[in-house]
Image 1 (cartoon, rainbow, N blue to C red):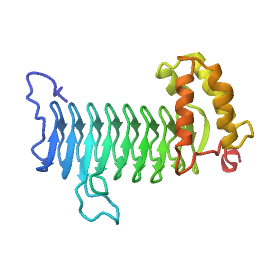
Image 2: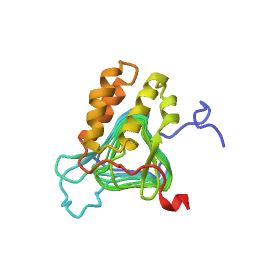
Image 3: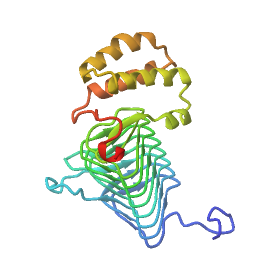
Length: 266
């Protein structure tokens, strides 16, 4: 297949078969592939790429929605692969928000009022229900399902085919149906150039939350009174503060199941 970036082959930024609504605003360098449908109030920044059949801005699948004006806001440098769908928000003046440099693979659904950070990888077939939040550089494995109002923290990873119905704290690796926290997302943290001192601090935080036998309140107090004072900037302090902030702000509840389930051990 010829390279579409070649100067000898003109590139159509918007395919003739794409449908672009009157309220859609696309920044410079956006590419819209065949049979895409962008409708409603959509605001997208520069250099976003919409693959074949991507649908953005459709009405939210929310029984409370009554036609009020809402929108989808998309940052810069995002890639949406084939047949991904992004619905606009429900609730007057609200938005479904997608940040910068996200990699959204084929058949992903991002429902109304979701908030996606920067640099996330959302793998084929992932289904994000309404009001789901992903922190920066979260990685969601293929065919995973995330319950409405759940949050997945910064640099957390969720394994393929998982069912998430509680908040997954930052920097953790979770998987299963039901989902369990298995440990730190060590590979993701190293790829993000988090150094060994910070990794060691986060391992202590993981053990305090999931292996100490303390309840959640006691574990947080231990992290705040013992681990935080011992950690230095660049040595895990920022990451510990993020974990504590995330857990204390949880409304749905933090996923406290850990290890392996009985079915996996049999």
